[in-house]
Image (cartoon, rainbow, N blue to C red; front, top):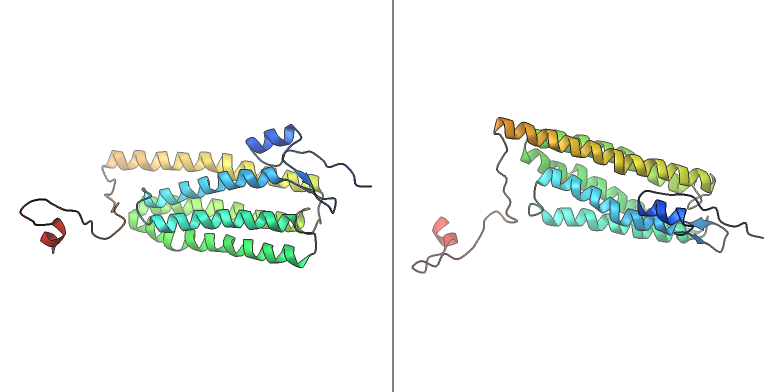
Length: 228
């Protein structure tokens, strides 16, 4: 006889409410409880965290917008494939195949954040580079815990109990979203205040291409041809 699923809070915000109402989870055929609401929550909140981090480096989505969207879409792919891995039976080849695919997307996010996106932060200015590096370091360190919890929890090897899994996910959700959000916001406010005081806010190249082409309707001469 399969024991009834344990209903516990497994995340923040909407997820807490769903769990408190006894919703947001499914009982799988192998007896494991799978928290669908947790992944729904992540599909909304993690892109928001990444978007805020990218905008710290870029100051505008018009700069390297393709890079920013690539990181966000990769994050959604990571979560979607993580859902399939969680649904797959414990110890099955399908589970580890999807887990490796999700982990590959996870690694690609780190490459994007610490490669080209950090390079953009350096181009923006030293204060921006310092703030971005600090925020990216905190978020990167916190997010490393999630695949470990997945592996140990009832979604992976089932080495720890569902109660312990939920408690770990909850703790890191609160830290990586609420606490990190406050730290990130205060850091941005401090940097902006200092730049306004110094009058040193840099002018950024907000155009998506090195040169903007548009018509100047004067004697048949365009700005692009005139600038050449």
